[in-house]
Image: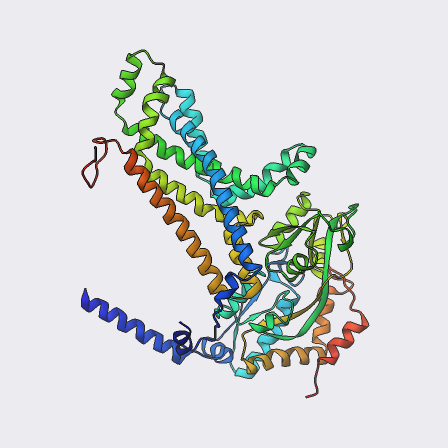
Length: 284
Length: 250
């Protein structure tokens, strides 16, 4: 028994030493394992969701695929592209525990979050609004007092409502599908999330005409891809891919696929947003 | 702790103050109070249902036994999480609209959680109580009836008081399970302790501190309850009826 304990302890010590030696940057880890793991959503159309053919697809996922291609070129080897589910409440822990290398979904870039993680360039801009049943008298934050608002745990809009509109009655769900179900059953008067995601929910619902997106943006939500801190090389790889995609037009092709006039969630890009995206591309 | 972490090359910064600085401390407290409220109310209903159906499974009338068996098998063989979704997203839909609207504005999340937890744990508790009743020699019931008591009087005055004292250890186990299962209520929007720890974690990104707080609080609650039940067990033990590790006091 005593010898067994010594062996066990020695083994653990060796393993932890190996851990120190093995503590690597993200690029080293991807090169060594040959796998690029991306955390994304499963219930947030059209950024990351399961479509009718049971495939896991989305706008953010397509952008992450571009990054995968760029990594293959940069590291000179084939890299497997793997997706993992992440929700607002789990995405930062997944990242810091190295379970995923990148979060590509609907994550808002904020200064507070930048204290724990790094963000890529902004790849989409939207703001928080409300989804209500057609015919509802709820119009936005002006008449929010006492209303039951469904929201997701960990989302920026939940925090904004809690801090700026405490008169609202928040009902917090762990994910988007539960919150939307609560809305369809009348358990909440409105469901709040980023405007574009509400449009996605509306168009994916059995009867899109039953739902209306209301309210001015009460927050500004620039979406960025999240990664661990102190990874300049990896961050350059990600930002470089996005810049190249915007410059060469691949980004706009993907945007058209998911938000264009023929898509399921038409959301025309305003000239200001296009200009903003193009100005993020610094010269080579 | 920080030095050890630094030695192993992690870059995590500990900040334990997130647990008590406002508003996080208040959330933790509110979560704890909600857990206690949910547990206490569900426990009362679960024990009531447990005694009712545990007894019915042992009475000499077959129809009653069948009803009780159906209840137990139906409710304990489905995961509690599924029951919570049923009671919150499913059951209210069949209520008339006005009743539903009233319920929505009067804490439907909380009462759906109470319904789910107490009915599920009622089924489990009834098995424990049934075991206690069946551990009592049949002669007790027979002699009770022989002295002129009706079956229900014999159960109420003789069998159940003994059974309840016999089953304190497994009943404590089930009660602790109930406390821990109350954490599932967060999936239907109840702001209890686990929800509060997750809230702190998503606002501050200090996962280790937040989840340590949750772990410690649950641990203290469970150990506290176990200690109290241990005292109860020793105080109400029936000398000679169960094997004991120490000599029974008189």
